[in-house]
Structure formats: C-alpha cells, structure tokens
Image (cartoon, rainbow, N blue to C red):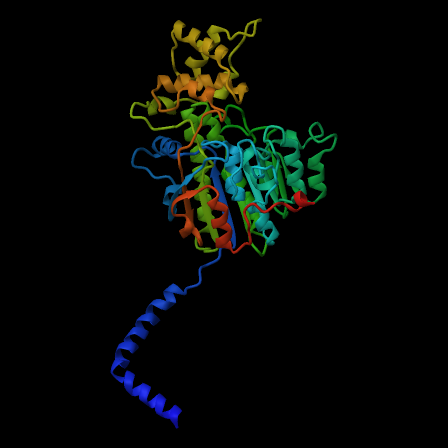
Length: 478
C-alpha cells in the first residue's frame, strides 16, 4: 500500500515536467547515436616515409613539377599534423633514432636502431601487427638494412656496424615482403659463408633482382626483392645508368598485391629514402625527382584504398635535412635542365697520379651536366674545398656534396651552408618539424603538434592492435 502510494505520488509530482523530460530525452536520442557510433577499425595500415622530406622538399617538388599553384597528392589527404623529431641524446635526430621513434614509440640515441637508451631491444609496430596475425612488409629505395626499414624489422645497437645482423634478423623475424637495395649484406661475404638469399628461397620466398623479375612474380605469399648491392639508383640517374630497378610505386604496388592476400590484413612501411640523399648533396633537381616519385606512390596507394574504407594511410618523414627552402632567387628553369645527380657527376671527374682532381675535368663536368661555366678561380676553390672537407659522416660523398653546394649557390637555391653540413654529426639534418598527412579510418587522430613517438601509438590504437611502447623483445629477456 505504501509502495503504491509512493509511486502514484511521485508520478503526480513530476507530471508538469513530463514534456520537458520527453524533449530532453529526444535530444539525447538524437545526439547519442553520433556519440556512440563505433569507429571503423582499419584492416590494413600503410605507412609511407619520405626520408628527410620536410616542407622545403615538398615545396621544391610542387613548384618544379606543377608550378606555384599546383598541389601534391599527399597534400590532398584528409588530416594533417606537425611532428617533432628530436632524439634522446640530441635536439637533431639521425635516421636511426628518428626511424626507431616512429617504429617503436620510444626515443633512443642517434645511431641506435630498435633499442632504447639502455640498449634493450624493443618491439616495433611491425612486430605488433605481425604478432596480431597480420602480414607485414618493408620497402626502401636505400638498403633494406638501412636505418629506417631496419627500425621496423630489426634491433641493433649501432647502424654503422649492424648491417649483416639486420639482414639475418629480417629473415628470422619472417617479414613477408622485403624490397629494396642492400643485396651485398645478404651474401656469403657478410654472412660468414652463408648465402642468406638461398635461405629465403628455401623458406618459400619469391626472389627478384630486377624490375622484370618483380613484375613476373604472381603466385607467392612471401617476397624478397634485392635490386642493388647497396643503395638503389637515383630517379635522376636511371636513364643514364640504364637501370633495371623497379620504381618505388612499382615496389609498393607489388607489396600490396602480395600482402593483401591475407585474410587478417597487413602492415606495410614504404620509404622514399633517396630524398634525404639528394638533400645532403644540396641536389635540388634530385630532390624534385625523388619527392615526386614518392608523391606518385602516395597517389597509387590512395587509389588502391579508395572506396575500401578498411585502410589507414599515414604519410610523413623521419626528419628534415639541410634546411631546404624554395628561395625567391632560385633559378627553377636552370635546375630543371640538369639531367644527372651530383653523385653521378662526381664519378665523371678524373684524378692525377697524386690523387688530386684534374681542373679540366671539373670545368667539363659542370659545363656538361649543370650548364655552368666556372672560372679558373672557382675551379681552384672547388678543388680546395674538397681537399679541406672533413665531414663527420659519409666522407665518401664529400665530392658530390661539394658539387651540389656549388650548383645550389650558382642557381641561388635555399640550403644550409656547406660548412654547417661538414660540422654536423648527422650530415646536415635539422630540428624543423615535419608534416604528417593521413586518410582512412583512424586518420582523424593525426592532428595538431605531435611527437614522432605518437605515430606507432596512433596506428595501433586505430587498428585495435595490442602494443606497449618500450616492451622488451622476448629474446632480450632470456
């Protein structure tokens, strides 16, 4: 009796407010479905990395290729952020620490790959996807054992001495698709008499060494393509070198066709690595060509993913190099006429019996390839600069880097001074923030100013893949 009275009394008490409560409920009903809408989980994640590609390289490529009102394909992606790139022990990262931060979600020291600051091996985002049952792949136009791809597929304390070990780890970690340069690290000379390529073949991998061999492979669920003993050819040199290597878009398309055969989806990292090489050399023509090839890769990936609604695409760089800028004074028309890289030009120089560069060869190279007539004084200055140049890294490139700086100065292109590069432990990297572009399910979290260590967290969260940054690999704990 008391219960019934109480209920009746409460109903009467709230009767005047029923309409308001009903209206409020309706409003909640309208907004609630939007708030509670389940986010689409991407089946696939494709991470595209333009090594060293800052805003300056993008602007050079955009203006050279399309003019001042043109638009790059990566700029059309739905979401964009800016990313900081410093390493654990330096305000400027190298590719090893930069790639590792992206891949593992952990800051490490320059020259370290896939380890934390104490040298402990840590899992990468690729490991997380593979452990979750997805197929995985890495691509690079440098060597597949180089800093960026290695950061996803291996762990070594030092990038300069760990190449052979990285190659073995790529095999041991059963990465489904591996495409790029660096074949010499898989041979008997570097593998204590063992042919690592034969091990891959025995394990069921399709093997390719040329563009034609790559395109002819159709029925395989694992693929190893090694197209150069070391770094793959520059885009600018492929014609003059009669290159038989596949392009970055071709390698990426083939990787997707292999990886997408799996039912559970895949993770792919594809690196346009030679943008950075061209920036180190202040080779603006090369920057243009390499960045456009990378951007064409973005175009092909976006086209493949269109209407699927199951693929997250993230486009970024690991750092910026040489403070590249589209200076007002830059002679775009003249730079576009250059038909070979500074590295190729350096190999056309001749030397006397004392290993000094012959002045006449300097004049000839600049005239024939860069359309520049150096004075005798400028030739002597060039030779003297090369002789005095004692760069901290990549001493093998001191001649082509000097050629690039000379051409950039002549055509008034914006780039860090040669002396800054020579004094830099990274060969001219900068701390400039770099852009991150994204499209597909989960891409809305690419927003604002972020850290490079955020990338792996965003990717794995979007794909609902378990991942704990800094988690030690099992073999490190044994």
